[in-house]
Length: 572
Ligand code: HC0
Ligand code: SF4
Ligand code: SF4
Image (cartoon, rainbow, N blue to C red; front, side, top):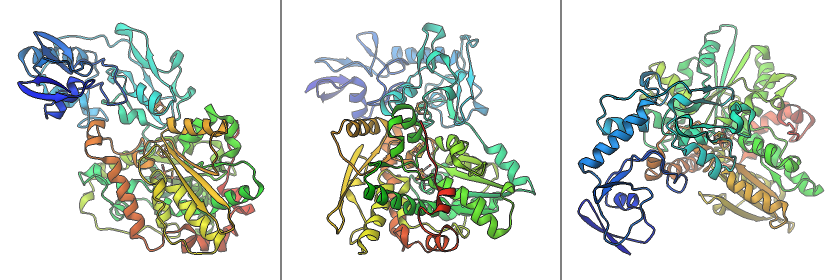
């Protein structure tokens, strides 16, 4: 260990530690904008400067050395940081009142902390651009501070490399290659770049206005469904604890907003297990197109299309649960209620930005009618609830509407990495063995490890080997191991976002530094498993509404009619 002094406090640190990390250990706050532990070490913003022997040095790259004597709050440091921030702000579009990140912006917070009152310089704003070509993401360069956090997240965590730095000096910007519009790139719309952005330079394409218009239209029946991961995150937008389960309040709020029916995507998650489980068993029988890959994450589907077209036949043909539910609302439900499907507007509330892209894919329509019309994120729903002046925290719980109001515990866990595989294994085992599964929890595929495995023995001696991956760098690794015959699996669950949908690109924005400290992933994950444990029915095939819809409409899993509404095909 090496002993150094920071603000007259002595600390002993292992070699290779940076002064920034050392100061944090001592509880001394050094501001940062670009630095993101293990993701971004590009050290561009310089606001983390500290003083050593009368010189200003960046603490994020300064490694400890014997005898270092550091000052983090001297006049030189304070003035240096202020100057750096003033220069940054001189180029920045400072219309905070209308900025989507107002009150949740690291730049705004830092300006306040450093007591910046005016900007003495006039920056060059002539090179700014605005790209709203994508169905999912808006890029506003007037807000960008060139920290590079989005670039590193897209490159390192997702291995997508849709964006990078272009040009130098005053002309520097973040851009896709050849300045293409984002929609024409390999971007898979996961929105993890939005989660990494400290300011309002990246955000979701909002669909709030058209939702209000649909609700106001007397000729439209507006039906909403909510994804499994919303209910453990929405409360955070209303200052409730991280991971709090707000299912009943969420339903109450949606009814107050004026939706005609409030359904649960969890119902269709159970349906997905029936369809995908049956599809898997028939592939196991025929030994074709194995391993089966889950297809419910639209970020993953697009990643496979761009990077591994040779595995598209291995993707399950199941539509995602939200799309299945959309298709059933416009067929089974419309018929039952005698509504013209053309007058139905299906809105889905998702933790996900990629679902906005998924919603408009041709592959996810039936008889040329889109299954889902509008996708809103958790953040957009929170924004509508706030706009309507609803006192969310104090709402009385209400229940989902029928017939798509009940999901099992197996469906609830779809929202977290490992959930789809666990739900599938619960059902596959019981259907094949005709025995009761003694322990429903598949511990080896729970938790936040990037690549997880589970094995289950069927009574006829067959073994099923499942892999679970989240974060596309992990998916890339596993797909390549499979293609090179280094690994053998039968079933592979892939979620593009690290952690799964609980930390999808549409969830409440938490500054990544606080995210780690508050254990946001872990806490939302716990909330999801609690939702499962709180339910009496915890297996998809035991959900009475699922049994009913097969009786009344779908006949049996993978039937002709199921194929018409619930399945699709992604082609190279
Ligand atoms: Fe997910 Fe889903 S689990 S993708 O992450 O399968 O968005 O929460 O809604 O559709 O159910 C997202 C979450 C869903 C779908 C479900 C699946
Ligand atoms: Fe990259 Fe995902 Fe952002 Fe697209 S949405 S630029 S893939 S991080
Ligand atoms: Fe969307 Fe979930 Fe996939 Fe992320 S993991 S892209 S939130 S479906």
